[in-house]
Image (tube, rainbow, N blue to C red; front, top):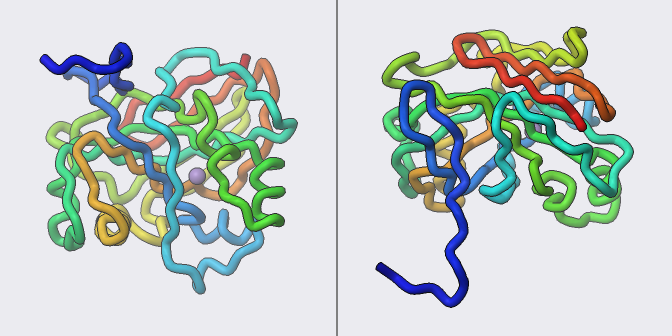
Length: 228
Ligand code: MN
């Protein structure tokens, strides 16, 4: 057993349906991966290669909990996303081998301090504090690919207080799951325990304290979060 200079912290985990908890290594996110969302954010989806940002592993939040409204924003947007959990890593993974790296799938929210992000964009500054703040990645329980198969189509929706605000389909991803894994693994070596948030459909908008968020991806456990 290794001794450390300070006490070792707990590994962040996401529960697995009928399985042991999934240990989170890192959280990567794809930007503007649905055309309608790229357009609503002022970009041309046909002219951009995929780009990525990251959240800390300890940004994960368990399903069916209350997430405090974050400080330093008055325009917090939840982005509903299908999340891919990797059981194996690799560098320059070919698309043909990408699905074999996947442990399972869940529903996630890419919480965003949109006002802060807009300011950073204007100033050419990094997005980290707008995207990777504490408790910025609520996740539903992971379903294993061995049990539910691989997901290449199906509704992706976010309802706020019962009203559907975001609605799309996994088959509308500009860069599908295989392409995303392959491309990202050409930028950095992927590892077991990495989560990839695959992007959000259009309809993003602000939420406030007391709002109830119901995130859905066909075939997966719904994500139910209250903003506190
Ligand atoms: Mn996102």
